[in-house]
Every structure is written in structure tokens, then in C-alpha cells.
Image (tube, rainbow, N blue to C red; front, side, top):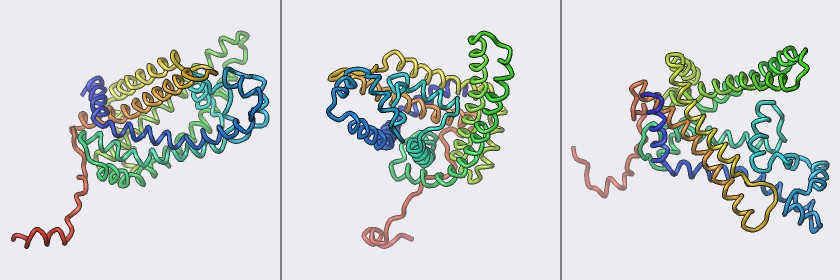
Amino acid sequence: MKTTGAFLEGIRRVARAPAILAGVLVLTFLVTLPLGLTLRGMLRDHLGASLAAQTAASGVNYDWWEEFAAQAQGVGTSFSPTIIGFGAVLGNLSAMLDNRAQPLAIAAVAAAYVVVWIFLAGGILDRYARNHAIGASGFFSRCGVFFFRFLRLAVFALLVYWLLYAYVHTWLFGTVYPWFIRDFTVERSAFAVRVLLYAVFGVLLLSCNVLFDYAKIRAVVEDRRSMIGALVAAARFIARQPGRVAGLYLLNGLLFLLVILGYAFVAPGAGGLGWSLWLGLVVTEVYLLARLWVKLLFYASQTAFFQATMAHAEYVAEPLPVWSESPAAEAIGGPPSV
């Protein structure tokens, strides 16, 4: 299957399983809700019934914002101008590329979110691989089967990403970047070098992401128990056709970029009450839904591509469990036939 065909097939598979998209959307809401309520309480306690409350609600009260930031702790430190509209997207991207530490509360919630995704990944990939409904019992059964396998895989992923940030990132931006710009006199040139190094580091991150995605896919489709074996098999699969693998990832990535650019044009700004507040909330939720849809599309299209390439189309190694009837049911049905 060519990359375009796998991409279109991935769209069809995601469309056939709307319950998965609804489920991960609800999951995301439930995981982030405690942080939102905590921050809401901090803002309410700090503003109280002051005149600053009205100006903060109708626009940006920068003096109050600086006062709040000076005394904020934990989740409150994330309440900065970068959280407004599209600034949040750029802020998250900058934090990832610059390896900026996050508040402990946010890091803990993010870690919990990742663990839940690890649990759901087995069921999601199994559903997309089978390409037909498996029911809630079948879905969560597959989640349980692959949860501990994917936890072992996550240990390898954590080690790889730690090496990237602890050594490669430090080398690129702590050694290579200062060496390159040591004689520069134009800031624009130094910025161009930094962007180039961001691109190099980003390619390394995405390459690791592709490797671990296909390791999960091979583990599910072929019912692999060894995650080291799944990683090696995934690396062999990618090495045999790097162009097609990269092409499919690029198609998904371009769609993700279109979602981000679309949000950049319609993202809500600061302030506003009444209908503008609710409109901004709707726009943000639609953007979140689109991002989750694209994330699932990565899974579905890569699964379809792997199955077609390896002649595993619509095949999963292990059948879904079928629970036997109880003795009482057999008794009702009469004596068993010989």
C-alpha cells in the first residue's frame, strides 16, 4: 500500500470508531479538570471582589498579572501571558525544544495522562488493526493484555528521550550553538543557527517517536511479548522502506500543521464576557478535538500501512477472548450432544 492509500485508509478506520475519539476527549477533559479547578480557586482567592477582577475579566490587567505571578506557586506559575489563545501552542513547543522544566503539579498530571494513554494504546491499536467493532469488553481486554508490555516499552522510550535531552540537547545548544555564533555580529544569523539546531533535534525526537509507534504496532498485530524484539523488528521495518515511512509520517504531520495553523487564525484572545467567552471556549474545544483526531490518525494510518506491507491486512495474531457459558446455562439448554 502506498503512503497516500494508507493515509486515506487511516481516515476511514478512525471514522469507523467514533467511540474511541469520544473516549479520549472525555479522558483529556477529566485529567485536566483538577488543574483548571485548582487554578480557578487561586485566581478567585487573589482577585476577590476587587476592581481588578472586572478589568481582568474584560481584558488584560498586566499590573495585576505581575502581582499574581510574583506570589504564585505550583500550578499558578503556569498562568502567564503565553496561555492566551495560540500563545499556549507556541509556549508548549518552546518548552519542549528548550527543555524547560514544568511545575511539579503539571508534570505529575502529564505523567498520569501518559500512563492512561499507555493503557489505552493496546485497545486502540487492536481496534484499528481488526478494522471492525470489538465491543467494550474486547477493547478493555486488549488494553489489559498490552498494558504491562507497553509499560516495559515506555521504560526504553524514557531512557532514549532522557539521553536525547540530557546529552544531545545539551551538546547542541550548550556546545555547538555557542561555537557557531562566537564570531556573529548579527542577531538574525544567530537565530537562524538556533532554528537549524531546533530542526535537527526535532528530527531526532520524531524519529524516536516513529520507532516506538511501529514497535507498538508490531507488538499488537503480531502479539509480541518481547518489547526488545518489537523494537528491533520495528527498526528493521523502517530501515527497509524509510522513504514510505517518512512520507506517511509527513502526510500526518502536514495535517497536524494545518490544524495548528487553523487554530492560529481563530484562537480566542484575552478578555471578553458573555457570548465571546463561550465562543472562545467552543473554538478551543474544537481545536482539542482536532488534535486528538490527528493523534489517532497517526495510529490508524501507520497500522494500515504496516498490515498492507507485511500482508497482515485486517489480521491480528491473537483472537478476542470468548467467555464460555456457565453450567447453569448449559443445564437450561438440555444435555450436551455427543
